[in-house]
Image 1 (cartoon, rainbow, N blue to C red):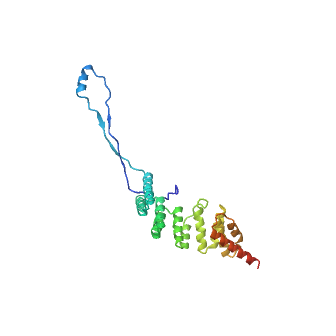
Image 2 (spheres, one colour):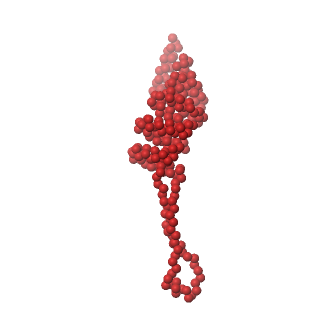
Image 3 (tube, rainbow, N blue to C red):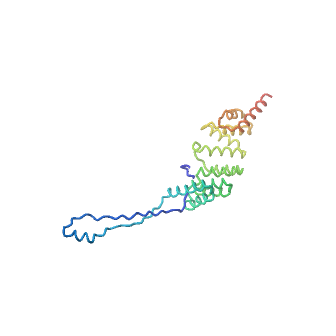
Length: 249
C-alpha cells in the first residue's frame, strides 16, 4: 500500500528455460593394452542429455512484472497501455487490491470518475473491510461534492483511528459538510488527541462556530500551526479579528 498494495495480475510471459545440452563424459575405465587400438579407431559415443523445463512465475513475481510494465508505459506517456496492463492483471487476480487502487487512481487522474468509482466499488464487494479502498472511494465522492454519500461509505467500516488518521480526518470533514457538526466536532477532538494538526483545529473551530459555541481557542491553535495553508491562515485571522471586535461591543 501499502506494502498496502494498493497498488495485479496479467497473463504475460511464461518464460521457458532451456537448459543447454551438456556432454557428459563416460567414467574412465581401465583398458587393457589390446583394447587401445580399437579405442583409437572407434571411440565410444559420449552420452548427452537435453531437457526443456518451463518456469511458472509466482503470483507476486508476475504481478511485480506487470507493475514494471505499467511503470514503463507511464514513463513513456502511454496511459492507455498502463491501464490495459493493470486491467489485464485484475482480470487474472481480481482480489489484488493494490492493483485495483492503482488502476482507479489512473482513471481518476484522467477524469474517468465513473470508471474509477466502479473499480473501487467492485473492490469493496470483494473486501468490505478494505480501509484504503473506502477512503479512495469517499475521496472520489467528495470530489463530486457528494458529501453524504462519502460519509456513508466511511461509516460502513470502523478501522483503528490511530492507524487510519486520514480516514477519520475525511470522515470528520464529510460530517461537517453534511451539517452534522456535533458528530464532526467529536471526531476532530479524537484526532487532536493523536496529533495537533492545524486543519483539525480549524475544522473543530468551524463546527463550534456553527453550533454557536466559542471557537476562538480552536482558531488560535490553528493560527499557530505550521501546517496550515496561507489561505486558511488569512481566514482564521479574519475570523479572530471579527470575533474580538464583536466581544468588545
